[in-house]
Image (cartoon, rainbow, N blue to C red; front, side):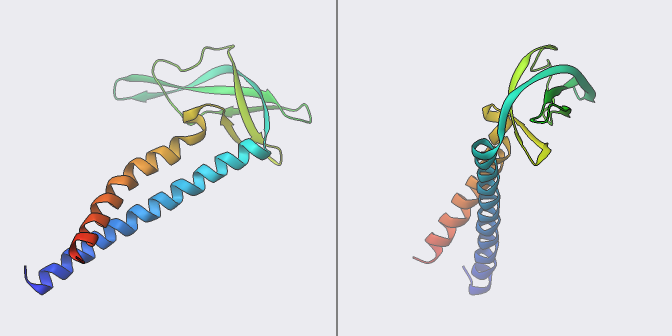
Length: 142
């Protein structure tokens, strides 16, 4: 392979590796935020009071609307960012949540996907980029 063509491939795979590294770093920071929220936040129970509906490719999607009382006994409502069909929760169902006491808009459902979905999705994208980019770079320098 010619020197110039080799340099183009090295740049391309370096960019893949850099993008993978950036996504992995962002996944780690999201994981840390969830862990900090679990450690420092307030855990309570929220009740599913309604659904926010939207149209998807295959029909109606449902996002649960939760209500809970914060430490000052004020009723707070929040809508999940996860849509599903069929609905994940039944109306009237109680669900464990955690929220930031200083910012009740920072609320997460205490479940694997509720806490870590962003980290998992970012790592699923970052992993092949790191492996492909890193492997090529290691191979090209040997």
